[in-house]
Image: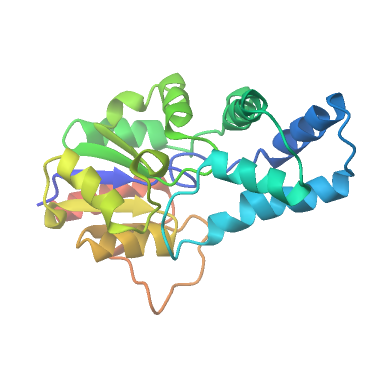
Length: 236
C-alpha cells in the first residue's frame, strides 16, 4: 500500500532553466572591474570545465559544492581572489535563479494539492549551483512548499542521486518502508535506478517520450504530471 510519494524537482516539478549566461557575464564583469585581463573565450572555457562538466559525473555521487567549482575556476584561470570576493561570487551564482525563476510544469500544483490530502509527499533533488535553501524560497513563492513534508537536497545531504543515502534519508524522515513508497522523476539513471535500488516503486516522467531503456525499467511511465493520480489510484 502506497503511503509516501516522492518527487524529483528539475524537469518534473520545475521546467528546466539554465543561468549560465548570467553567471558567466557577471564573473566576466567582476574581473574587468578589478582590471584582471582575461579574454571572454578563456573565461567561458574555464567556466565550462569548472561548473558544468563535473555535474555529469554521478559515478562517485559526492555532491560538488559551489565553493569547489569556484576554486577550480580560479585555479584554471590562475587567479587569486580574497575570501570575501569568493563569497560575493558564490552568493551571486547561487541566487541567480531568483531573478527569473523556472516555471512549474503544467498541472503540478493541482496534482500536489490532491495527492497531499491522502499521502505523505517528499521532494528529492540533486542541486547544482542553486542550493536547497534557494530552491525552497521558490517553492514557497509558488505556494507548493507546504505540500512536501520533507525536502531532501543533495547539497544538504552531501550526495547526489542515485546514491541510496538520499532516498533512504527521505524514507526515514517520512517514517516509511521502501515497499510503501513510490518515486517520480524524469531521469532514468538518477531517479528510476536510484529509487529501484532502494526497493521503491518508480514512475518515469517521460514528457518528451524518449525511447525506453532495456537496462533501467520503471514500474510505470507517464507523459503528463497529472497522470500520477491515475497510477496511484491503481496501486491503492
